[in-house]
Amino acid sequence: VNESTEDRLVDLFRAVDGQIDAGPFPSFAPRPRRWQIIAMAASVLAIVAGAWVVLADRGDAPMTPVSDRPTTQADDSLFVAAADETCRRLDRARNGVAPRFRTSEAYLVVVESRRMAIDEAVERLLETTPPVGDVSLPSRVADELREVRAGLVQLEQAAADARLDDAATQWSRVDPAIDRAVEALAERGATACD
Amino acid sequence: VSAVVSGRLSPSIMIGAVDAPDAATGSLSLEELYRSEARRLLGMLCVLLGDRSEAEDVLQEAFARVHRSWDRIQDRDRAAAYLRSTAFNLARSTWRRRRRRSGTIDRRQSDEAHSSSVVDVVVDGLMLREDQRAVLAALRTLPDRQRACVVLRFYGGAGIDEIGATLGIAPNSVKTHLQRAMSHLRSELEATR
View 1 (cartoon, rainbow over the protein chains, first blue to last red):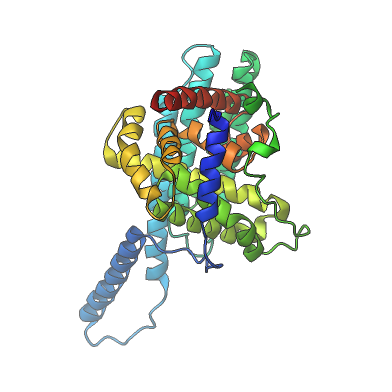
View 2: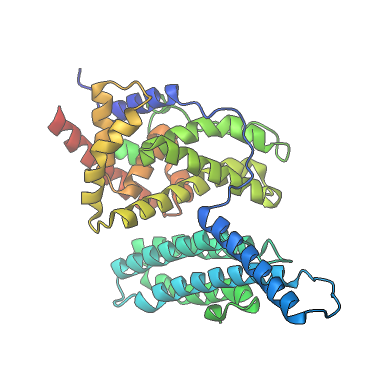
């Protein structure tokens, strides 16, 4: 039997498809990752230890109501650390890769590099515990970064079509767009995003 | 190859277009999206990643992310495309993590080294003939992006533009990836015939 490669692929995929069962509709509450559990446990321990030190120092001083500020600080510090890491990753890519020559290939290389940097940054951002009081901040920034990523498709197309002037114009907009996307992280205290 | 990359591929040789949720705009629920997409997406992820449990994790995470963004997805007809795009991005992250763990710099070497064990894992629990296993092993020798293009084209029944949108690459790049992939698969399968 002289089957074409296409036929053989379809034959394999049919066989797999016929045996796959995704199961019933499950709950999609995101599962905490191991580092999140460890970080959470560490935060709780730090808060308990901090409260203990305060109480021990005060001795018989009158008890004051415990505010929820320590929890807020703990959660925010996790977020700020993740945001800093996100921006440092982006910076590494931006400092290390730029089109050295005005050629289609040079632009295609930098597009791929920026795309990977954005993917990694978005992934890191969405993995982290969101800041208190603005839980949608990571996904908003991630969406803006994804828009920058989507814009890279036009740049890639321009480079592939050898429209180098268009590619240069679009390239000049990429890093400023990334800066705008991460501005909100800087406002939240991520110094690496300044 | 030209038919494969030009978008003139006959529907009869594909498994079928990804089932688009048939609900009216706005009325599609996440459960309906799961029913229409999950099985085929899981199959594609199994072939892509070569590991059933990793594929299930990626599927779960992709749905969790769509679930989180559900209120912001204005056009629910696009939810399936968004889901697929998210899942393929996550699969790509999984490849990257896997590569970092293995510490192998050479992508091709890494994929080839991985291929024999992957075939066993995927075959575990699936009844595949020897010739089907050979195709699976050949697929594993492709670079990640080429493999993703082939899976979306022949498993997902996606067109060139749809593949480009899912993977976030230009249609011309999709055509190039498909051309190279099919040419590589052809010679790989000829060699093992």
